[in-house]
Image 1 (tube, each protein chain N blue to C red):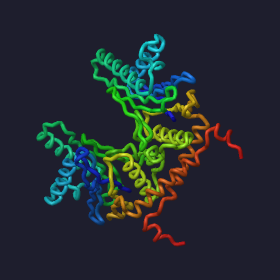
Image 2: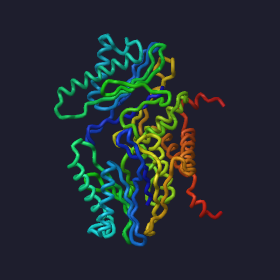
Image 3: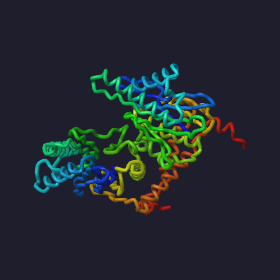
Length: 235
Length: 235
């Protein structure tokens, strides 16, 4: 499993900030859960606070005692809906307090799964034909994922694809920005795996971005010419 | 100037149809105006009807007697706003009756210009830093345009870029579909230029799509490896 998120939050153009949207919960040997968040920052922070408080209090359910990924998603969904309801009771401005989550991970020897939890509290899992999920500003980066991400793709290839998908989104939309957080989880490892954060200035991130740009230009250069161009070419 | 549009219209998933969204008005030697439309189909059809009726009646203003591109945009904008107002008087369902247009062209020996006319009737032109405009389902295809489209790009390169931008959008979003209409206008020609329509089955469109897909896969293959991958490689 590959997780990738940007770090830009905004409440209007004059209120832009940087917060990680990737929240791993790791109990080595037992379970790994990664929560990605999008939407209202106050809502997502409150949800995370509740998840952590429930862990501290050993509440039932919490992320450590749910039996499988679907129980985990049900639990996160119910916390999210509760928080949204609370926030909207306080708010009379009509602000959008919604939040969307991707929850991925593996619990004991269950199958690794990723689930997209809607603001409404219902959720979907990824499919064989479409083995990825996106939340937030999804459209800019979707075409390359649509073309490339298939079941059984190598983890590193999927990770590079996620990086260039995010890079395109960052270039095209101001509300998405570095650092880019990545977490690469190997099935059945039940450990955090490879986790890193790439700033705009990171040499590796820059080399990926440059290589992708020149690769795209080359792909464009190599496209077949229009019929009238080849007619006109005298060689 | 390069114009590119898809042809899918929908009023819900059970009501999908095919209409060209590209409407050229050409008076050779005098003026070329190309109108691209997005949004409510009844609104855009009514606007076109009005533009044509005004031409038939030799009304003032009409597309043939406006003095420059800004007058043309003002005129189309006012027709669009009138039509939207009329339609919304009839409608009590709260449907979205809005339409957006791109108007591009050249009038006599004025500068060629493209203008994006919002549903509200105001409009913007393209800029030196961002020499393209998009309407409708714009996000999927924007990253490649952002990277490639610069002032003084060769017309055919821009056209290929528009085609792959549209191809990515078609693959990623059901509400966008072939045939893809293109019109390539050479500055000061004051003629229709090259105009063609590419269906999904068109051999040239298919060869562009295939070449672009393999070019992207190659660009992805050529990306720098993560540090741990090269460490592990024994050669």
